[in-house]
Amino acid sequence: MQAKIAPSILAADFSEMGAAIRMIQSAGAGLVHCDVMDGSFVEPITFGGQMIKNIRPLTKLPLDCHLMVEHPKTQIKFFADAGADIITVHYEACKKISADYLKETLGLIRSYGVKCGAAVNPDVPVENIFDVFPLCDMIVIMSVFPGYGGQKFIPATLENMKKAREYAIRIGRPDLDIEADGGVTVENSAAIKAAGANVLVAGSAVFRSADPAKTIAELGR
Ligand code: DX5
Ligand code: ZN
Image (cartoon, rainbow, N blue to C red):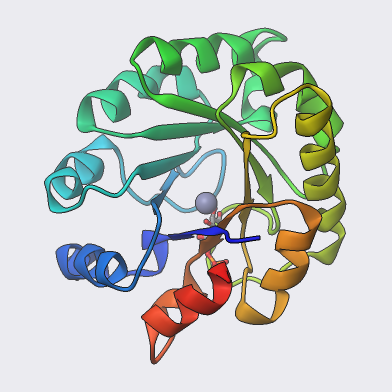
């Protein structure tokens, strides 16, 4: 199956972000994956809505904002106003606040006319978010623990991707995007797509490649 490739700008040189966006766009990226980290849900801090605002005019590609933050609801307006096309939030952060927080946050994202999604970590069964599948445009299956680029793919997460795709089909949502996020390489991309992911995040695989266009083509094939 042909997959959409979402290079993660976490792997870019932030002082040259404009060039990075132009490079991935000309190399055939399908989306721009923007890894937002708050220094609390995950240790590092990356960037906020201002980065999205600055890169928005540089590309027509969908800006896929992955919020690795403790209180995602508080951030939605900043990313929606900045021009995000998709905002995904973590089940693990939401469930700490309340049973309904994830559903409420997804509804808030949609209220801005922005696509929404839920993300689960490698140690969380994707069944835990089956209840919000009908509310989502995309499901993010973390294939590394969030916080850093350049980590090794965790093969056990293929199971979550498979179950996510099977469930999406079962509820009549074959169009639901299933995104694999973390440690994606040309070597493991076939297994990831076979498991049912159709959006592949690739940070280091693209930004460390001598030929990003070739890498993106191979990842997506
Ligand atoms: C990790 C991020 C991933 C990561 C992907 O917390 O969500 O998007 O940056 O980078 P690679 O492809 O290098 O694992
Ligand atoms: Zn990510």
